[in-house]
Image 1 (spheres, rainbow, N blue to C red):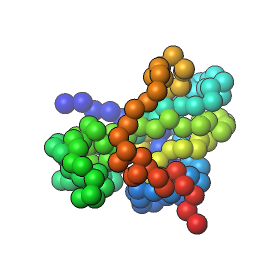
Image 2: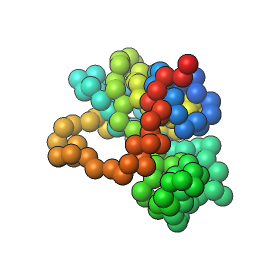
Image 3: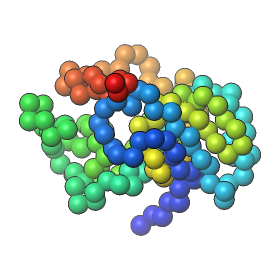
Amino acid sequence: MYTIEPIAFVKNNRTEAEDDYWGNVISEIIISDKLSEASIKGIEEFSHLEIIFYFHLADPSAISISATHPRGNKKLPKTGIFAQRKKARPNMLGSAIVKLIKAEKNILTVSGLDAINETPVIDIKPVMKEFLPEGNVKQPEWSKEIMKHYWSVKK
């Protein structure tokens, strides 16, 4: 058994975990008072960060350890939990590569974070080209379909 204490919390205007329209969400990542402001020293030199977070409002009884239709859409093929990015996963962890807008004191302002308000942040890492995949990224057509409006701006 492991115990992980959050290092920060998300602050934004999203209070429900919706599947789409994350395009205009700007989030603040508020670093815990237990950590020094020096913990993010130099982070502003990076354009992007990788954020690991905990799906704190996900229903543990809905956790999938098998294959399901993505987003419950029976028109899409059944795929295993590790071929999806849904919140109902064994350890309820999410990750996102975000754009760093600014860093001030103990607050990181970012875009591209699909985590709701008060989401616990488990870790923050700078994105370096050397850790990104080489070559083309391959993905099935159904995944492109479900992502069509994910980063759109809600009208």
